[in-house]
Amino acid sequence: MLGGIASRRDRNNVEGVTPVARDRVELARMVRAHAYALGFDLVGITELGPVETAAAFDAWVEAGRAGTMAYLERGAEKRRDTRLPLPGTTHAIVVGMDYGGREPSGPVARYARGDDYHDVMDTRLRELHRRLERDAGRAVHGKPYVDTGPVLERDLARRAGLGWFGKNTNLINPERGSFFFLGALVVDVELATDAPFEADRCGTCTRCIDACPTGAIVAPRELDARRCVSYLTIELREEIPVELREGIGALLYGCDVCQEVCPWNERFAQELKEPAFAPRDVLAGKDARQLARELLAMSQEEFSASFKGSPMKRVKLRGLRRNSAVVLGNVGAVEDVPALQQALVDPEPLVREHAAWALNEITRRHAPRV
Image (cartoon, rainbow, N blue to C red):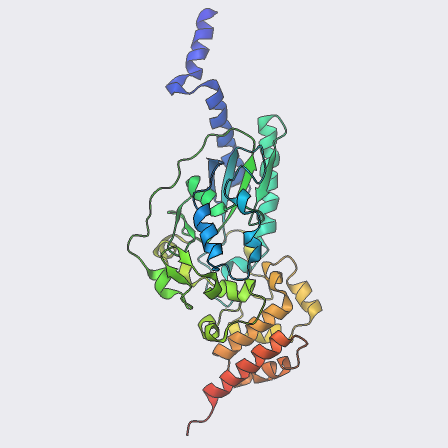
């Protein structure tokens, strides 16, 4: 009997692992298994605490590089320590979900062609939360974050071992590149953690900096959002500065250029496997000019039906029409003039101004040379 007890005690302390630590390890193992089963492609775990990049983020906002994204200034105190957004939590389960970097380039950034990733990931993180409660045998205090609160998920992801910060400011994973979404579930459960990703594997490469069509990457890991095509076509609700319109080219919503040229994506980007992120019918197989013309002619009712559950609904129809005009101004031909002329009587002054600019650009390009 005593021998049996001693034997069990020895097994519980193998390699210095205490029974409590073993529980942390086992729970972490189960969390990973659940996360992968739910469709996440990357999983890491880290303790919550002071955020290493908070000072740099505050300085970035203070310098005005966030442009009109005033919401980034909210919750600054909470953003500096990941324990503060949801008091009582101690650990973060950080996940990545791939959205298909091998998909072809197009007028809409790959991330936005299917369903809204906020909704997709939030639903699955909540299910992960439920499964953790079942495994822990108690109610778990926790909350999912997917770009929805004062949490710097990229910082948490590096601390959870998922990758390093590329010179284009994206998190890069050495086995998947950077075409993936990040989310986090913060919880009050003790879990075995992963080692942070310490290496910088960009080396001397500057492809992303050199390729940015508007010069928005002003230095390694320094982005001026005010010049970024994604900001200009999504976050900016006003007129797009004239001097930046040409750089937008045929990009109607978002931009993948700095990711496309990255050697890590050229080698490790994945095929699209998540059905939720497959291009919806309104976008599939259409080039920039065709999509721009269709959006300029689209009614509000058609827009609401076509983009229900899409991240593109964020900019509303007026924003997509503005962007469409800029695209046609850059790559349009004489055949696109009727669509732009119709946009000159759009009820939105924003659309009318950009349509007039586009018509002038097409006229200039196609005017007979003397």
